[in-house]
Amino acid sequence: MELSKRLEEALNKQINLELGAAYTYKGMEQYFREEGLPQYAHFFEEHTKEEIEHAEDFRNFIEDVDGHVVYLPLEGVSTEYSSPKEAFEAALDHEKMISASIRDILEIAIEEKHYAAENFLRTYIDEQVEEENLFRSVLDAIKHAGEKGAAPFTLSQILKHED
Image (cartoon, rainbow, N blue to C red):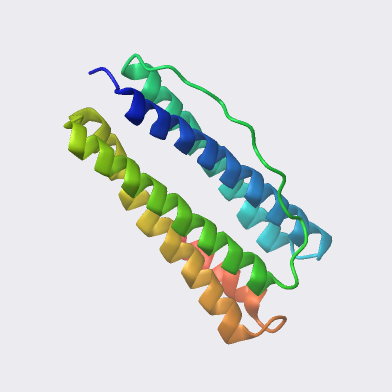
């Protein structure tokens, strides 16, 4: 199943967004390291790895349908936030942007009747529901616990439920 130029470009853009997410989360990891919050740092370290895996999945899919992979430049990311809450709000916003991009690509695949791309992308629609829910849950815990309070303990408990 050959990719149209439009679908191939959208999938390549998604590779860049996934790698950009990894880079963003690496910046957040660094912020939490410098703040002395190792649980939060570890959370973002793991999400960095996950986003790289997602980029690889998109690369593999493009290759599997004889497309051409293009790596685009990444922009710099912040390693400074005013609080853990601000970092998680930024992360949730980023996940929402990733979700919107995947939905847009799925619309192209549906329009072009590229069934293999549809199937592939639907797994990522489900993945993004889980990701947004996780980030929202952690953010809610931070809001309820307060900036310092029991948030690290709560994060640890939330992560145990996600494994």
